[in-house]
Length: 104
Image 1 (spheres, rainbow, N blue to C red):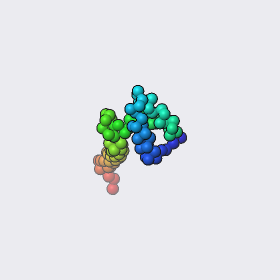
Image 2: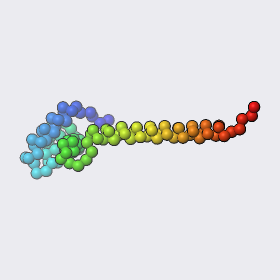
Image 3: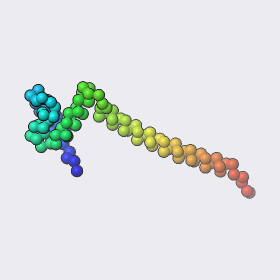
Image 4: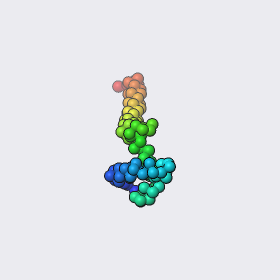
């Protein structure tokens, strides 16, 4: 089960990484010592960095707010499709009932 890190921990790690980036030849060389120091997987720290760059507009991608909105709209769309299918089935059922001759 993955560990859940607090937002303060993420912010601290990203600050430390930003301070260390100029001293290293590439990002991974800067990420590894910060990750080891904080006890975080280096890949986790790299993903945090990518997400922060997307949020800041420095890298193309979908922001967290936009991703949540897309997810919400997809759920709503699926719910509306199910409701439409139910209403179509009900209208077919009641149309058949109206066409059926009554015997009284």
